Structure formats: structure tokens, C-alpha cells
Amino acid sequence: MAPVIDDQTTYSHYLVARQAVQDEALNRLTPTDDQKITLIVIGVYVAAVLILWNMPFIKIVLAPFKLLTVGLHEFSHAIVGCFTCAKIEAIEIDPDEGGVTRMRGGIPMCTLPAGYLGSSLIGAILVMCGFDVLASKVASIFLGVCLLFILWWARNWLTRGIGILFIGLIVLLWLVAKSTGLKYYVLFVGVMSCLYCLWDILDDLVFRKAYESDASKFAKQCGGCMSSRVWGVIWFIISLIFFVAGILIGLVAFKDDQETQQQRADSLGTLQ
Image 1 (cartoon, rainbow, N blue to C red):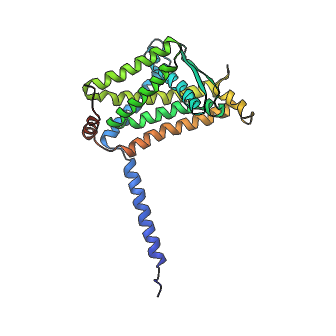
Image 2 (image 1 turned 90 degrees about the vertical axis):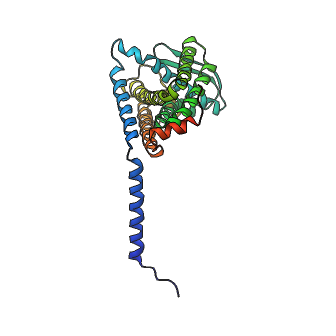
Image 3 (image 1 turned 45 degrees about the vertical axis):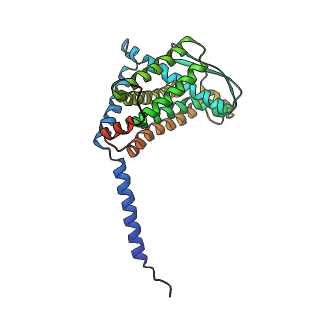
């Protein structure tokens, strides 16, 4: 005789299971005490960057980090160019916080949006890793590799100087106080990269069109089906999603307290 299935009981089990999943999701997204500190630090970083961004004289403090984010933007163009069989000839950063990647070949439909979307993705990854000491160490190695590629493709001394400066800072933070400062360095670079990308998209692609941008070139590649401003809005939304996702994934993935994080991070080894 076939078993009798009670639809009401089955539905009740479904409701219980769904509630358990919702409770678990809420629990994973609820910040621990250590994560609350990290969120506060992110908030302070965001406020500081927005306040200092255009303040006379004081904005000089952010200038090296702005140039670093320009470097990550150009690196993103270059690395996607490599994946699409382009030959990278040069990466150059200029003092006016602009940059250019010279390449031959590649697929423009991929390389053109890679600058903004790639640098915002890198920033989001760094923000995510900024919730954990060990993950920050791994992220600093990843960031160092990106800077080494920038150095390899650099064709002017400012670009070389930015690469050497921030590689040196990574090494220094590995050496000092069991690398505890590395977490906040990685977090700041991530926040800065995300914010710079968001602001640059709005400034260059949405609010004004004083010169040809990645978005205007991309719009031409797409046959003019949408304007550069529309592409700018789309890229802005994607970049914002990356930033928020970096924070949320960090909250879900790294629940250990600071002491446990440090113990796991020490297992990676130090340069001391």
C-alpha cells in the first residue's frame, strides 16, 4: 500500500525549513563585535575620503592612493587585454590622476569596460578580505602581484614610483607588529579603489563629456545602441553592487574573533 502524504504536514515542514534558512542567513549577516569595528573603520574611511577628496592642500594626502587606483584601473585594462591576446606595450600614470594603457590587438568589447569594472572588482575583493587578518595577508600578496605587473608594463617614472612605493609599504607592514596593520591597509586600498571608481564614472561619464572616455569608445563599439552616459550609469550600478557585495561576503565569510584570526594568520608565516 502506498504511503499517505499529508499535504499539511509537508507544508509545515517546508515552512520550518524555510524559517531555518532565513534565520541562518540573518545570523550570518549579523556582524560580530569585531566585524562591527571593521564596519566602523569602513565608514570612517568613506567619510575621510569624501571629505579630503577636493579640500585644498589636504587632498595631497590622498594623491598617492588616487594614483594607485589609477594604476589598478590601467592594470585591469591590461590584464583583460592579455586574456584576449593583446600585446601590452605600456602603462602610464600622469600627475593629473589620469592614465593610459597602450596595447595592440585584444577585444575592445572586453578591454574597454575592464578598467572601471576590473578596478572596482579588485577594490571589492580587498574590502571583503579586509574583514580577516589571514585573508588580508593573501590579498596583500595579490595586490603586490598586480603592482609587479604594473611595474613590468610601466613606461614612465611616476608609474614606476607608485608601484615601488606601495610594494614597499606592503613589505613594511608585513614586518611590523605581526602584520596587524596590513588588514587596515588592504581595507583602505579597497575602499579607495571602489570610491574612486564610482566617482570617476560619475565625473567622467555621466556629469560631463569633455573628452573621449572608455564609455564613449565602448558606445561606438556597440554601434551607438546606447549613449556613453547610459553605459556610465550601468557601470556605476555594477561597481556599486561589487562594493556592497564585498562588504556582505566579508560579513558572511569571516566570523572569527580577532585573536583567532591572528592565530590563523601567523600560520602563513611572517617576514620577521
